[in-house]
Length: 129
Image (cartoon, rainbow, N blue to C red; front, side, top):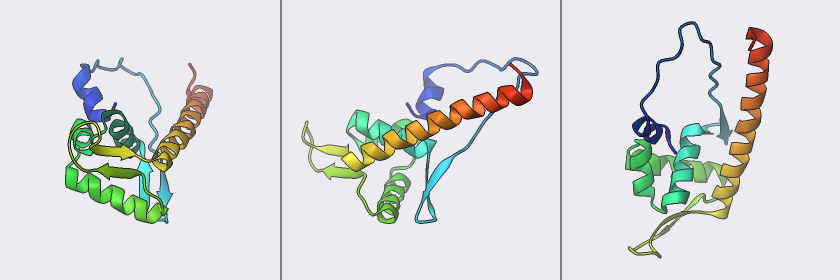
């Protein structure tokens, strides 16, 4: 679920006063210029679930044009296709994530989970439980 969808799904609780939490922004860079991080991973994941680029973009709160341009640029920089379009409506139409896109998403999520575990461990070492 994307950040925008998570924000709509549940009300936020105020953090406890004085509470410290680590926050880390991470992305991988293709061809030295095109970034892929949590937001784009969420978008790719939503396309895989929904089978529609338009619905996925709306759910994560991006403009269709900006998101489609980003993925075209990402595919050029990576040298592989991450999305494939199937024109028309019904079960055969829509946008699907390619096997390369699924591999990228899987590898990025595994990379991110490992970083999150290490960040939590280091944070506890430095700031306590």
